[in-house]
Image 1 (cartoon, rainbow, N blue to C red):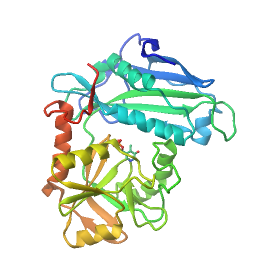
Image 2: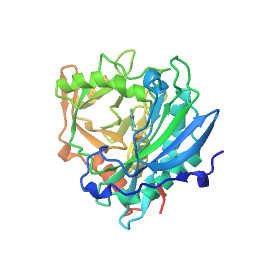
Image 3: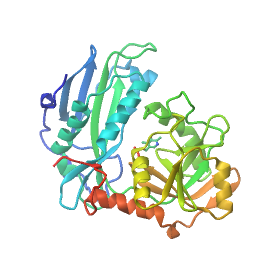
Length: 355
Ligand SMILES: *Cc1c(COP(=O)(O)O)cnc(C)c1O
């Protein structure tokens, strides 16, 4: 077994930080000086190394490139108002990563590598964490199958990596969403609950078609009737109807078990709202809108945290919202920001402090 102390650290000769402006840095475009890389071979993880960020050298037959054994996570680290660094709920991502790994017949990554490796890597590249408001360090752990043999079977070799990307405020202009009725993201028995690369490749054509119609993303519906709503892009979805917040439940295995979703459910409860997790049909949403009871609709995910939806289109029926009048989504957003930046008490123990 790998111990945290066995992580080999090979430092970059010089830092590229001076070439990057951290203020308002775009999402996912720049990467820090170092990355973590670990190899799985003969049934065990070995050679855990933090080293200078660099391209990977892969055999053209690399299994992940052909048969899609590839999974990932998305996490954020923040500098609070006192300059101390914390990662937001990384143990939840660690757990979910290994749920994805199991579904894709990939090996589990031990905590010593996932959490301790992440901690050591962030510690080394901590100068890259922007300290402006709404800025953060996006953490991308991922695993790929690396057998260099063509053939549909689980790989015997894997690579686990963590890369880090400083990020500015997500440009979260309220979204226009198209309710998808032809394409399907996930069906029971499939891989919808896994953060597997294949889910995102499959979403690009339907999303591109919605974009042609002027929409930002699609709201996925169930595979059988295209009637029950699921989620949006890389976000879970919430509907405030009357005084209750509703979000689709996870029981079908067709929705990603979002950590922001879970945090938002808790914060809505802290705010005194009742939150219901259950099947939600599009007819019910349309009816609530027609009665003036559909107050707010928003997406939740690590990248944008909370994204308001200003328009929801189902067939030819357009539901529009005056986002400027909303109270709930903005309050959830500011409560989460206050926990992260240290101005509110971290009463749920969500921050994993690394300094
Ligand atoms: C990552 C992701 C989410 C959001 O999960 P968080 O843990 O909140 O970031 C929701 N849906 C899909 C499909 C995702 O990939």
